[in-house]
Length: 147
Image 1 (tube, rainbow, N blue to C red):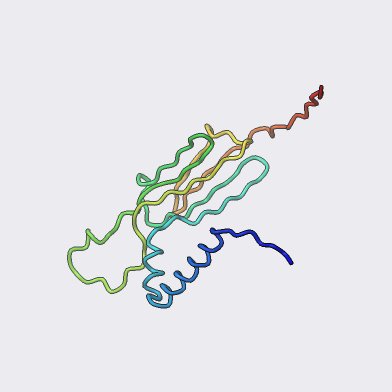
Image 2: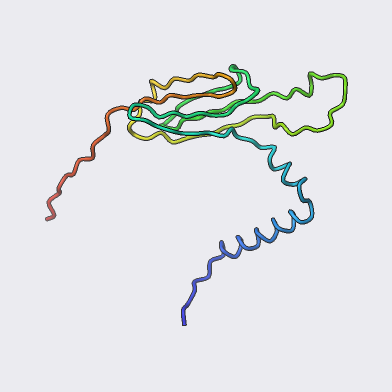
């Protein structure tokens, strides 16, 4: 007979799944649409021998509303997409699916990059960051004598 240790987090996780299922059954798409209102841009990260490239989809945003910063080896992209609803005084809206509001995405930078030389370009709704690599840090093996 195999003994299984009681794990309260596993039990809570099961309860959470059941509550989520009940809400989905009751509210359907309305709940899903309200959850989607919190948004973050889709991001692609690629690399070659010299650079790491990060591309973030930020359609409909102004360049002045995008902030890129690095603090303690964490790259952060943040900003706000402003709603056009206040600008339109006349007429009716029949369907609003685009998401507005603030966002923030953070990424931990690897050791082999130089954060002081990161460049950013915003064109056609895509923010492209070029993160130059430095020489790979080679790990040293140090033998320590055991006494």
